[in-house]
Amino acid sequence: MTGPQDVEPLPYPLDPPSALQPPETWEELRRTCPVARVSLPSGDEASLLTRYEDVRTALSDPRFSREGLTRPDAARVAAGGSDGIFKSPMAKTLNAQGHERWRRMVGKWFTARRMAALRPDMEAMSDRLIDGMLERGRPADLVAGLAFPLPVFVICRMLGVPESDRDRFKTWSDIFLNVTRYTRDETESAYQEFAAYMAGLIDGKRADPGDDLLSLLLTGAGGTDEPMSDEALVATGQALLLAGHETTAGFIGLMVAHLLSDRRRWERLLADPSLVRAAVEESLRFDPNGAKTGMQRYVHEDVELSGGAVPTGTTVVCSMAAANRDRSVWENADEMDIGRSPNPHLTFGAGAHSCLGQPLARTEMQAVLSVLLRRLPTLELAVAAEELRAEEGLLTAPLHALPVTW
Image 1 (cartoon, rainbow, N blue to C red):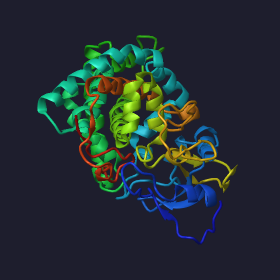
Image 2: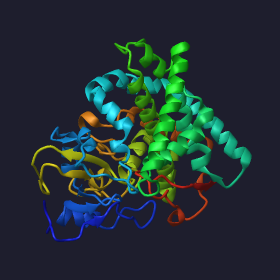
Image 3: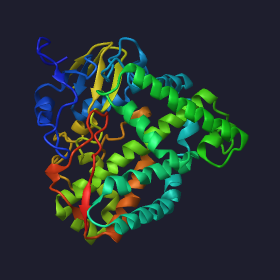
């Protein structure tokens, strides 16, 4: 591992100067200490990877695994005695299913083709939510009015979950994704409550199945090959609800904030809406804080990376956001170019464990951006970009609010 071992580890996550700016140490770390010792909120130590090549390797090489994060010697992320989401009952259950089998059963419902078929409903819902913003008047909070409720609507519709329960999902996900605020007992209690909720929902679908994803997985209908066990169904429902609304909601708010923080970006999209798809990809690459803590992996055998050696038993933190700003890969890496192509960013990971829901997130972001450009071409920030604040203490760093006017 590079860097002297007697140097105190860096507190992690690294603090950025503002919600839309990257930590100031990224470039120095990539250049002088690309495998850096860090101290997680739990107090456990890990190794932070910031180079594109190293992060891509750690996310795709089988010597680095997500399943290994449940091992007792793997670093915990969350403070307060909690094992965190990577060692949660949900994660352990999904790991026990076998990753390839689970992805085979669930992944066929998250293809780009299936998501494209859902896009008209996404755009129609975006229109209705914008109608509500217009009725309530200016200024508006784009997070509360659009970025959060849209993904909730979409994932609840897909899973057959009542949208009216969205505040409960929000409470649970805030607890699961928080790394500083909750104790082990509070976190375990929330997992039990969420599991009981999902179990009750699945019992109802067993008695009266619909055409939603949970019903299809329960019965083995719709080409899912075989029914999924109740325990696996509960964990799957939890995982998809968490990932399907919280992360995408954050991406939507941050995308709009970056586009409006430099008005030339928004004006370029207005002049050429065909750039929407490229703008979404560049937003995913450019944003430095949405996936604030990155992804963790457990090292199963000694590995030599471009930044140095990583020994067996190490927990590495893969900063996709730092890798996406690597100047050895990206020309003008610190500039947002909404026409950038190709754009092989690592925001959704890489390899066998890349994000299953990325076609869903991409389609939602494209849909909502297209509708915003059509409905609110004069949209602008209602506060200075420097005044925007991210939610504190979460694995992700969505904006607390996004005040806008038009």
